[in-house]
Amino acid sequence: MAKTDVGRMEGYKSMIKRVGQRHGVDPALIAGIISRESRAGNTIKDNNGWGDNGNGFGLMQVDVNPNGGNHKAEGKWDSEEHLNQATGILVYFIKRIQNKFPNWGAEQKLKGAIAAYNMGDGNVHSYENVDQHTTGRDYSNDVTARAQWYKRHGY
Image (cartoon, rainbow, N blue to C red):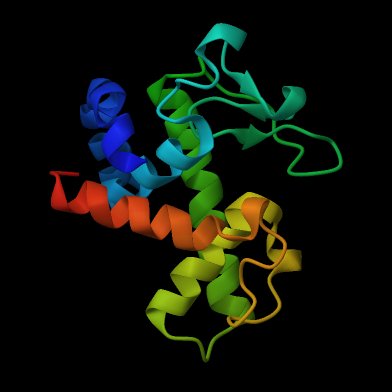
């Protein structure tokens, strides 16, 4: 899927790199989330950036549902402001998972944070079942695989 999305992703590459540098997050990871969440905008461009039945906004599908993330959408759906907001949310979950599971290895913590980005850190209970409650039950594994592909291709 990452390869399929690469043409659309190229339009966001410089913005992704700036946001990654600003937040200390690998740009390939941001690209992996964008690919998984919106197929680099392809699944949401006709809805002005809204997806998930109006519960997600932007390339990285920030959760605006009051019973979910309850975030206020910032910026245009494909803007750097949006990517800053969404990456900030990811960083929040990275810190939460690091504190919640101090004995996990770095890769485990990152996968836990990616899963938490999708479903909240309250649903991350163990590394063995990290994707148990995520969309498709494969979210962190899929995002990680896409991020690895983007890393090999200049992100």
